[in-house]
Image 1 (cartoon, rainbow, N blue to C red):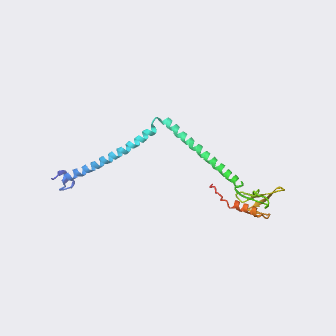
Image 2 (spheres, one colour; image 1 turned 45 degrees about the vertical axis):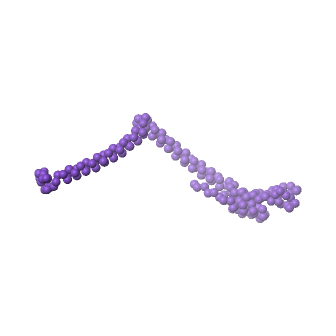
Length: 176
């Protein structure tokens, strides 16, 4: 079938049915796109209605301000907590963190392991050793200072064992 319009615009011998089929395909594709967009808009509308339910612009603004105030409070609290943790961590460095205890019989005629050597160290292995020697005549207590895990006075076997026990304890590192 010949069309005078097609001949006029320079499409000689073109069948108008192909153009109608092409237009129909384009219309169907556009309808599908419109339906998909309508579904997306419906989902957004539901979210919007849920968000705005029971709210007007003024009350919604108050809610947003309240959220920002809460965030500001939490930031300040977190900052203060971080500072407090640093202070506590620095104080903990000087606290006695490792302990070594050895119980022994100072004299063979005595039983029950009433004598002991107690070693207490801080994070830098500074501290002391207390040695309590129990005998029939009484109880004698000696202390020896430790700097970096070393004593300026010779250590007895039990004192050295208590020091080694204290030095052998695992140190838990705190992340800043």
